[in-house]
Image (cartoon, rainbow, N blue to C red; front, side, top):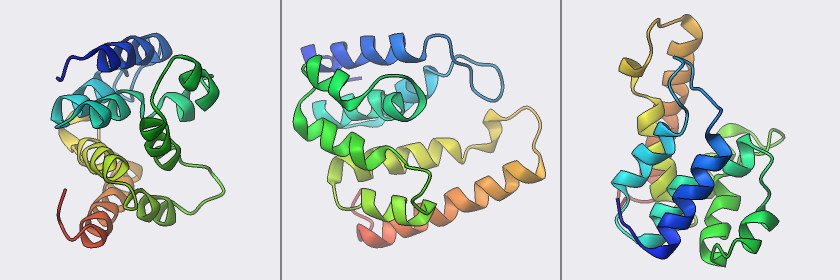
Length: 148
């Protein structure tokens, strides 16, 4: 993890936003963004990894993050990382490739979400989701020429 005033602020915001959420196996959800943040190579991508699901999955807004002093460059990446239900999934993934921060976080997100060892019981729905994520990884690698 990269520890700077910004990443520490993002850690606190991430924890507060997700503290009562659980993942599909009952583990604290906050472990997921922390896992992604551990893989990032700079301050802004670390902050984006920590905050990548905050707007999509909690009551936190982009305006809240701006008020907290999150830099616009991070918020721009977060806007790309926040999937709107009316946008087809692969179109959403393709748009993340337009920003190096968003692309790096999305690739780490897809890889972590594709890790079937995280699941206690694997269903047909999990297998379909896994295939979708692998297709998204291929698309993202293709659009970034594998430079992530």
